[in-house]
Image (tube, rainbow, N blue to C red; front, side, top):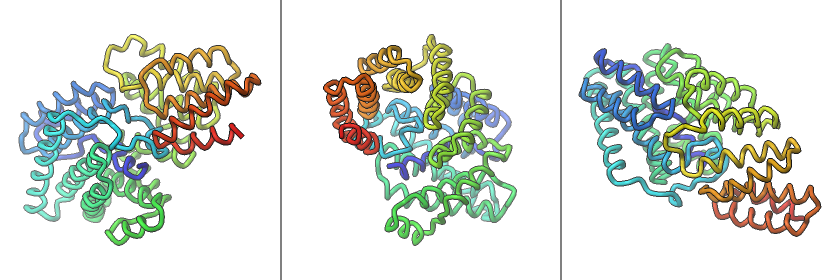
Length: 388
């Protein structure tokens, strides 16, 4: 599932296009809204951009991306944790409502159609190839993360990869094309040997280091995809345990998009992975206070996730009573099974420290059941080790 999920690594922003000034301005506004978690507003802004220029493939692609991200958000799978392990199997999550799915397909099909027309009219037009590859990548991401059609998504993604390699050949200065190429190279490098060879035979390149380097080049390129590349690096750096680098990107994101509360959540989570529990607690306390009155819709299980993360940080700091309070409260709220499982795991650790083996056994056995059931094998295995 990780390989499928990283296909969706934040490829949503509109790229350079031959649109009119009104459409350009509306797409820029919509991108800012997306990054600040104002998803519904972003959808409307992209629809206005489509009305302003019905021939702008990037406007249709932006609309499709905003609809896809709204679907993903409402399913509660928009955190780095979802793509670090093997959680969030698409088949186990809520299906999107038919209206949203239909709107997504209409928008992405129009984006692809318009881009193909431009490529057919001028095969040497680098931006036309960029628009086509980016639109196809959005379709592949939706197939992987929403429909769960992993291999179908890879087959579709092959065209996106090829189109953006063409962009880099036609115009080596277009470093924004390196985002998709680098992301797919990284994905292929993480596959087990048989599917990796299948990917090579299908035309994908590999190489983990080269993949990361290409995404870094895209993040350094002052184009409209720069923030997408920064988000992608947060994920890749966490995968590679380059936590300092991930936190640098998150600092930029927090400064640029102060309404994106998930940037604070991810900063705390990344600090936890780095073993910087005091920093993690600071980010989480700040984020929870900063957005306590935020009236916007939250992801399913988001409040429980905040509490689980802060409880984990407080437990590591020795603030046992506060940690227990956070963790117990998290279990009273709606949340994903892997979050529940990890919360029970933390409570099991606290019980072991307190010398209460009976309570620890109950918590750890519950953690194993929940984590195994939600595809979180690493946490289940940790609970089993502690039981011994």
